[in-house]
Length: 310
Length: 306
Image 1 (cartoon, rainbow over the protein chains, first blue to last red):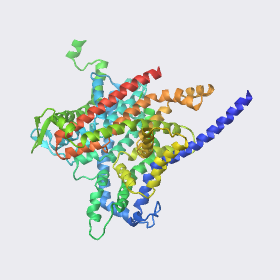
Image 2: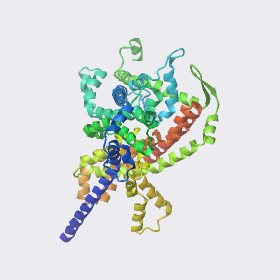
Image 3: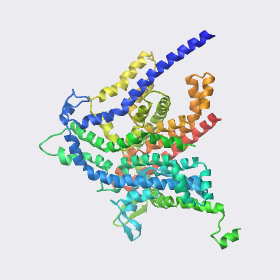
Image 4: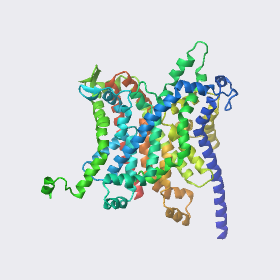
């Protein structure tokens, strides 16, 4: 009897050891797949373009330089672009978190006629691709108002802020759903106590529910920032002049062509152009990476607590 | 009671008051959704059945029946091709993403040194994959042959898989199976980079497994295999549904897929009728797919939990 258990224990130990090695190999291998483009970005952004044609250069640049970064920053007009992105994208994402929280709370805690139907619309918002409504939406902003009293909102911040304020911006359906699930999970006693103390529903929401939902707020806010920061489709539809980081990165090719590639003095192959493009990528994700480095665990915490499928 | 409330509308019952407050909380969204979602949605449906001419001022619609739909399906040289390629890609990638992300979530839920770092790395695609950076890096990596990219792709690619299959003595494996497997290996990049959110959601599910279930399994002497199928899987199954739906929507809605780009190009050409018809065909397929998936999986889940 004890023999069997001893051999069992030994076998289990061996299996554990094998598993540990296997796990390590899997995680490093796949981790490398994820980190590879980032390492590549850093490696390319700090080398001169001749290194692209040097087969001996794999990761470490032979001719390290900061010129590429400087030129790309110049081409992207980085400080103005950054300012625009902060004012437009980050501003919108902040506003939208608040409006979605209010809406989600309404759906989570009150019963009213037509609630099921209205929530069906929220689900539709998740399902409908932006492309389906982009064209009519464009016309709507082009002639915003009724009949003759219409103004052109294209190229103004209102095209992004108005939907954000009314919880109808980028991925807002998903955000309302997240908040609804989260608020449903909070104990009812919290509100009842506030009601008995004479708090109105809105004050109850602001004073009691919102502070308890801090982690959900943070998680949704982080996703909101990421989605707005990365958006190029919606902003490309509504803006012709305003420049955000994502739009500038999309147009980096053209911009660089005007500034660098088209001059008769130098000829730059598509292969060599990669250094500028990778530099542009690096510039545009660095702020997100910094944010991620500090707040990484909050990306998951809120989702874990929200019981999103419950 | 009813009379009373008609006379003095201030005195509403508690229930009525609460439902009024409910409308209050969602009113902002409701106004917005009518203006920025429902009206455009209906308009785009109208566009798809019309000849749209854009003059100075407003758009003029002339009813054209199914003309645009027939054109898009029959004559547009790209649309149907893109449509079928997007559909097949979603079809084979979705199960892979689900299996992969569940597998990684199970690993990341175990205790080991460097777990925090591993989690940080595997969630990283979440902040990058939706943006314009992703298409650029995938393009650049494909373009540069020698600088590591090739080593990297051969590391996971056909040769290795083929070698492995031979090593295992699986000569008789059918060609289609073999190409499917090497297809997975070639696309490992796309799968890993599109699994971030799914891993997070699965991890949340795994952490909901009560410790008592784990202890019971340990007392009963369950193997890791049994533990996975008897404990992990049932607890995680609602999250599989959530992830399944999310993955399908995510891959359909991605602005980088061919259909989306075709619709965008049509719109840029001011051919609103055709673009809207394309978008609506596409959207109906999404709806049908999500509906079907939810229906089938809900039945399966029901029996499993039972």
